[in-house]
Structure formats: structure tokens, C-alpha cells
Image (cartoon, rainbow, N blue to C red; front, side):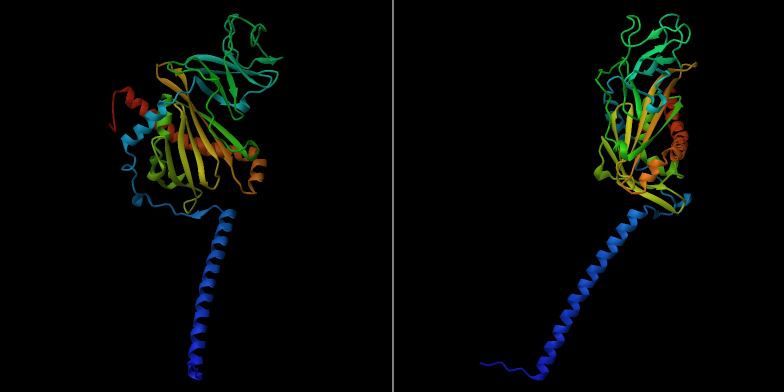
Amino acid sequence: MTLRTTPETSRHDRSDADAAVRHVAGGLTERISQRISQRVSGRMAEVNPLRRLPVEPRDRLEGTWRQARPARIRRAFEVAQGRDPGGWHVVGASSELRPTRSVTRTVGGREVVLWRGEDGRALAGPGACPHLGALLEDCEVMHGKVYCRWHGLALGEGTRKDWLTYPAHDDGVLLWVRLPTEGETPTEAPTITRRPPVDASFATVIAERGTCEPADVIANRLDPWHGTWYHPYAFSHLTVDDSASSDEVLTVDVAFRVSRTWGVPVRAEFACPDARTIVMTIVDGEGTGSVVETHATFVGPDAQGRPVTIMTEATIAHSERKGFRVARALAGVIRPAVASTARQLWVDDMAYAERRWLLRSRGETYGA
């Protein structure tokens, strides 16, 4: 049987075919347009990390006290306090230790002197000269030894049986000393968390003193929920991702404020490698790989018997952006601004830590 077509049938077929072509072409155009839009958006994000994120007025800003559950914070704190630091204490920035002069620190009521050996290594020992007890602060360092300012007694590794050195470590950003510490098992080296490459980052270190214990500094950082309300000048749009968090790691989405209208959104993780350290690592967004290390070192009691702790914070900035090379070259100019921002935050956060200790010293308990 032969099928015959009429002019009318041919017109209908052509019309259907044209419609099909337009449909396919339209779909392709839409997909191409979406891909172009995604690429353009991605490239714009690469060029400019700023996002329009207006700050909520205070009277419309939702409180975070429901999310900041005391039991949850306490569990994370207990996990952190169970991690042995191995007797290692942060005692300053690497840049503070010059090749030709000594510096002294007090850790747990013990005076410690630090200096550099002939090979540039950080060395440490008792802070008092065994001769007449002179403080070995700002002494000359020659041939890998510290020379007491009072009478010129040379002190170093193996020089005297009544003046034994302590293990010390310079990680390139911070100085550490290992001292006998109750409840801690000495380790060969401190636990250093992953940092961005040295040749692709720059570090800024600050130190602040507080009337509290090291645990109070760590407890402050294990409460990220306070960021939006307590530091509105610095943070906004903060949420803790419960599905990605645990008692070992807190995963936070937050915007760093640039102005009341603009912010830089990032995703960060908070974790404690030891009981006196908490590290924030940016895992997504601008500055991925950058870290902020917060270390708490017990100095000893003050004249009133209250505990004194030094908080040392290292901000190690990194970015894959080409412009970051310029930032590294201008690190000397940028560091003061980074340090100023960090200190402003710690005016508030140290008040938090000090309040925590004060309540405990008075026997007051909240959030039980």
C-alpha cells in the first residue's frame, strides 16, 4: 500500500518540525546562557569576594542563645581539655627572638630565658643566672651562649650542671618551650596544625594578658554563637552547621564585616589540637586555607593571687588570588591593621574569659 502526501500534510509536517527545532534551540540557548552566567558569576567571585549582606538592625537581629546550648559547649570543652599538650607552652612570636639578644618569659610561675644558637635554633633555660640570680633579659648572645649582664657569665647547652636547658621549638611563626607540667606527658615536639605554605602566606601575631586561666580563653572560642551579637562590628550572618559539626569540630558559616552593607562570607572550622590551643581554619570562601591559632599560656598568680594568662594569637593569611602576592609584599604595612582588628576582638573576648573565671572563683554556676 502506497502512502500519499498532500500539500496540506506537508505544511503540517514542516510546521511540527520547525516547532521541534525552535524547542531544541531554545533549550540549548537557555543552557548556554546559564553556563555563561555561572562562569561570569564565578569569575566575578574570583575578582571580588565582597557580597551585599546588609547588617540586620539590632532590634530585628535574632538572638543566638537558644543555639548556644550550655551542654553542647561543655561537651566540646571537655573534649578539648582532655587533649594533652605534652608540656609545650607558646611563649611569643618567632620574630621577637633576635640572633644577638635574649628574651625572658614567665610560664607557670617559672622564669624562662630564650635565645638563638649559632645555627639559629631557639634555645631555652632558667631565667635566673645561677651566679647571683640576675634576670637574663636582654642579654648579649655570642657564640650560641647567653652572657649575663651583671658579670658576664656565659650560659648555654651543657655549660653548667646547676643550670640545665629546656627543650624549645621555633615553628617559624611561634616560639614554644617545654616545661614539666602537672598531668602532662612530655612529647618530642608540640602539635602544630596544618598551615598554608610559608611562601604563600604571611603571619601576624598578637598577645593579650588576662585575669583568667588558659581554659577560659579556650572556652570563649568554643562558643562561636556569641560572634554576631558580641562582635557586630566584625561578624554577621553566623550559623553553626550542625550536620557538619561534632564535639571535636565546629563548622561555622559567617560573614566578615567590611561595612554595614558589605561582607565576605566564608566557611570555617574550629578545632582544638591540645587543651591550650584552638584553631580556626577557613575551609571555603575567601582565604581558604588561612588559619587563626589561639594559644593560652598560664603566667602565674598576680599579687592578689589571681591567675594571669597570656593569649597569643597567630593569624596566618593565605589566598589563591593573584593579588595576594602584592599583599605579601606589603605585609609590613598590612600587619598593623590585622593586629588592630584582632586586638579589638580580644578586648571583648578577654572580658568574656575573665568573667568566666570570676564567676567560677565566686562559686557561681550558670548553664548547668
